Length: 181
Length: 442
Image (cartoon, rainbow over all chains, first blue to last red; front, side, top):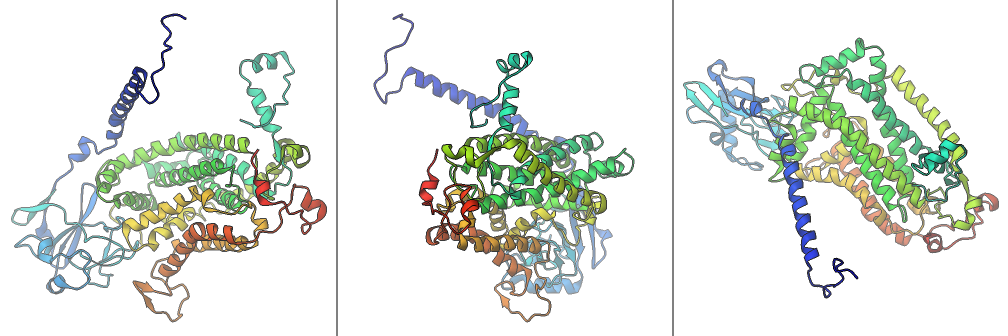
């Protein structure tokens, strides 16, 4: 029996130096694995040039009353709708309508002084299709993909969508010009 | 990989030299001489057909990749260029495009065959689970591939399917942005989808190797569903070659003929015309449908009125397949000897077709036009919404309730002791082996 051979067994259930080195080596390997994987995973996040497209400006005076235009922001379509008096009347009357899935008043979805101008992301909050205006049951949008109905305030009234159409972060910078993002 | 004794004898000097260093010829020879139950019917040929499908997809895909441009500006035009200008490009693309559909035709038959003959039961659970993994990878690969031509259906399919991830509470939104590589589906998304679409078939190939390894370890199931004892191997088994190489080959030719009919006479019959319109992020097509092979799962997604619930149900519809071996409580493998279960199985097949049909319809449309109906909770009873829900209910009930319950309650028919018995004595004179005995392992 040579001295370099370890023959002395540790008592049952007690941690040995070998257990320690196994756990330490295992933990180091897992840590190294995570460190190698992270840059690869993170490379799939939006790149700097993609993020640089985060804000746009638009002059809303081009949108006449009762008219709707679509602009793109971060590659996503955005509805700008200058609502008519009749539409305004209806959405304000519906502020406390029973059965609102995501209750919000119309004022909470617009900017003071620009109540008629509704700015919403044009993607259905269900699975992202673009709703069309004028075909729904509530005087607003209807999503052709899975049948969600929105009113003219972009509030979800019926169908599978979980939320109102999202209002992006935006502000009126000078007069009628808005900056989204 | 093969679980039987090797009968290969190297003949030439080169073969002997190679056999002691890399026994690859032995491996192939053992594969070919594998003892296989002698009663396999044509439903069992789809394994070989599927392997050819995979090879076809990989081979045509490699050549398409030589001409395709994974860039939002050029993708659509490059696919059209393949169709019009590249030599034989139309053929390669139509084979690849219809090949995907053929692949799914074959895989659904293959899976239903496994379900009918109890091929997932002990000791074959791993074959089934690996098969489920392959099926899941196939769905993912097919979806990624469908996005590449960058037509309207490509774009909006990608939009809808990636949005499923966004339905996950809390982490959904950041994961969605990470998956797309930006706030919307764009070039970054197309690039990574292309990369993964090229990768996954090779992953599938790897899992297929494991699938076959497991198959050759636990042995082929057969229509009678009994395990063949070692001493009966000589009588009940035949070598894989030439018996099943020929049978598989014949079935393959018939299958390829059907494939060719699609490729040459109706190449776009299974596709959607909207995918020949270039992707437009500002216009959603009026009626979005996935490819036909995903329709049953798409129907399940839409059946649930809650967004996240729908996503969970859709994934559960695939996930439940993984635990199938433990949901079926019957000791008898083959449904040939399970008269009650056989009826539920038939309903399951029809139900699957109904789900697929529902997936292609507008939820609010009437199933029977003009039939009087009444409102039930959130829709008319006579609407695809409710038909889909009832079908979804049966789909899950089949696995979670019917299989466990019927397995315990039904009285199976007498099962034969050997493969020859039903042939020699007639189907009604089985010796009635106790299932448990036939179940004995090894």
